[in-house]
Image (cartoon, one colour):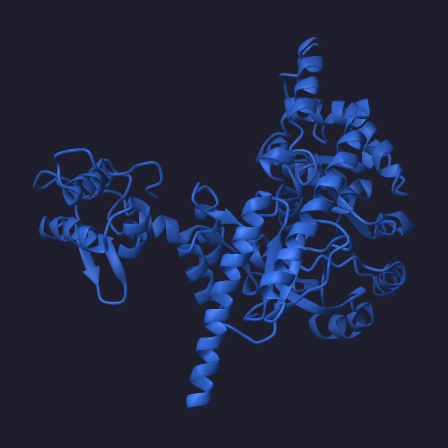
Length: 490
């Protein structure tokens, strides 16, 4: 809410007065309307780099002026403006905010989204490539090549650029998927694909099956569309497909969402046998699947088995692909492959929401796929990820071997670290953030999971990976010892 401003310590104006004046401006300019709950004193103190007593002085001054009001246990809210007597009240924006159809992110995700842009934080949970892993030189080559051509500055057709869809058709054929361009829809990343599916194919109250744990639990896309999420347990081979008939009978699931290759968050690769079983069960149950395959090309040791879509002879799989995890999240380009009536429907919904993905980004992706640069980049990237994985695993073994265990992933970004004893991960998350470490705790992916942490080796620098895991280990050891001491005293 306040990122980008700091009090000036060189100024003759007291720090508390600078802060109160800044907050006053936020209120009087309408940025913080009546009813806005302002951040906690601790958060403000950390954000501004001052003592908590300084924040208390600033807020007391604003409270005395009638601009703020503190509620016991309910935080501090904006209560008034310096308007002329008799002026009409402002719109009650907070009631609008609370009435919106789209659900808010859970508080931990909101905190992660804010903290990811703090330069003093080591991002141990971030699921994207580090800046130094992004293909800057190759991207310059692509952009230079495009600059000598007629630039696509207008809208693309509803399903996306016809030539790009042709190249995607050729690209996925290397995975065993046969898809005509007419069965492909260009979307602004896999997240938009899920949003389009939720509002374009399902009715409110539908039940979505997914792996437990799953990335979907951390995002409100399906919840906002009125859907219910039901998790099906996993083992080391992937989702336990044999359980699907039981769950289908009990919950009447509308479709199943799965990440079979380098699963988020566990890193699991679904075995070939399990994939065959899953397809057989879903075909028998008449249960459509969403196959999220955005991590497929991030293999390190060996390619994962062929996609579920490669064995789809009856059109039950909606296949999601993207370059966000491999080339650039900033391109915001992905694709859905499915039966033509479904793709037509989703294309119509997409035209209603954004009138098509960026034509320029589509042209860039086409160059990547048509020039051979993509495969060259992936060969180099796999070497870099292999080295990063080694560094992360060594640090975990050195600093956390007595307190946690894990499976070494065969690709992707993530190590699903299992603590040997349960800890209050919300408290650990807060303590880690205070220590400059940003985590993705297990409860983001599975209810009250207090046993797991998702560690990413893709984003933090090599030095920060080691430093971050060491600092995390200190917190985990201290917290574990604290609980062990309390238990022995009972």
